[in-house]
Amino acid sequence: MKNSDQDKYRKARFGSSFNREHAKAKYEESKHGIARESVPQHENLIEIKIKQAMLDGKFDDLPGKGKPIDFNKMPNVPEHLRTGYQALKSSGFVPEEVLLKKEMASLKERIKKCKNEEEIKALKRQLVDVSNKFYYYMDYNKSLK
Image (cartoon, rainbow, N blue to C red; front, side, top):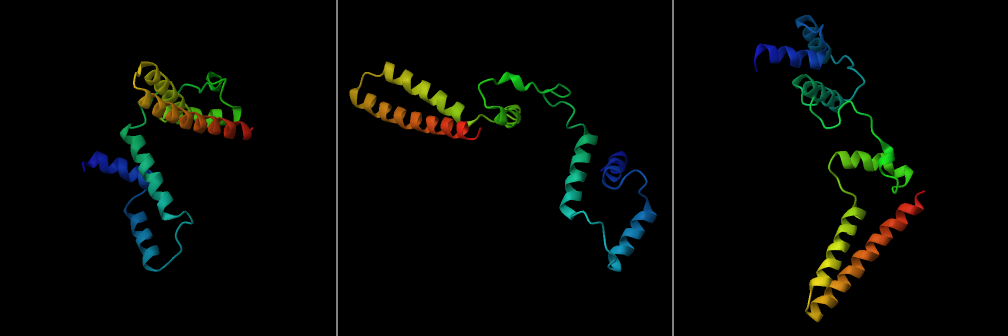
């Protein structure tokens, strides 16, 4: 690690006023069993990683940075689900209902193009299964209102 990188890391981890005397005091505390901060160790590690990523500029080019979230873009989604769906959408996640709807459309197209009766029957059974699952999800979402 370069000296400038070490300084960034040290500042991110301990704050800008951390120096050798502070390190020695922390060592003495741990050596003599003096109680440490009440924050669990893993939370400190998480904060360090986030600060390090911020210093490295890893959050600078995120899509939609600095723009407000427009929750009115999804009028068909129940209001209590919009925030969660928007967060999932911005991270690239697609809800199960959307995937099922796409699968239903695909099966309908395959049925239209198919000429084999046995295959059509199998596709229709599959379409019924997918449709039932889709409507189950939709009923469940309505029950949460």
